Image 1: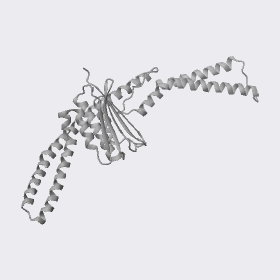
Image 2 (image 1 turned 45 degrees about the horizontal axis):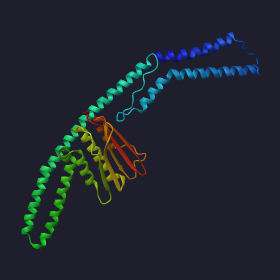
Image 3 (image 1 turned 90 degrees about the vertical axis):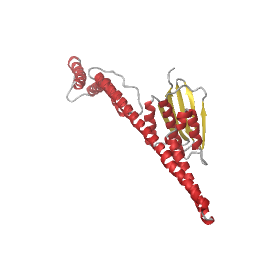
Length: 313
């Protein structure tokens, strides 16, 4: 009702002013109307419409800002809250919307933290089973194949050697998958060594991966290091699978009170494509540690920047 009366009173003020001008002013209307009278009335009507539009624009401006904020709100890309302006119930409405965004972001952050924590635990479990169960089984198969090949006839021995090589390749692949699921080097040797190993692993015949690290990196928490590692892993994996790139550069450097991870390739870029599950997952991880993620790209490549706040000393 407040908005209704606000608009009603604005329009009533314009009409009362126009009525007062007609009653108290020297304006008259003949029958038929003279050209000068038509000009005066047209000018008065135009002035009334302009005044009405200005008053409505001023009165509804806070609601327009709130509407834009609602249309552009994204829980994965936090923005500054809408300024509380206006009169009557409009400030209450804006404050309620800002509180709703705060609550939704907090709830999403909590649910994302639980989901990612469960995901990391499941990755660790799968990695252990691959290493302990499947890895040991394949190792036993290799030993059995070697024993059988040593006693097999010459014509069968060559085929058994080939089976051995295939099995050994499968075992190496399982170990590689287990390392990616559970980055033990991150826990044992630290973030820089883990990223160096990840970059070296991504280098292939068609892709050259390079890394560069500052020597005076500030201290980061375990959760922040894991977020940096997973984001770098996702970026390098996307580059190798989808970017059609020949070079990818990874750097980790100090940027004021933050640590900045930059992954840049020379592939085909992301263009106007919508963000997929990979980028969404990176944004969710960034929110967990209060980091900022930027993804940009054109026909000359894609750049991902992640800024993680350092641990205060």
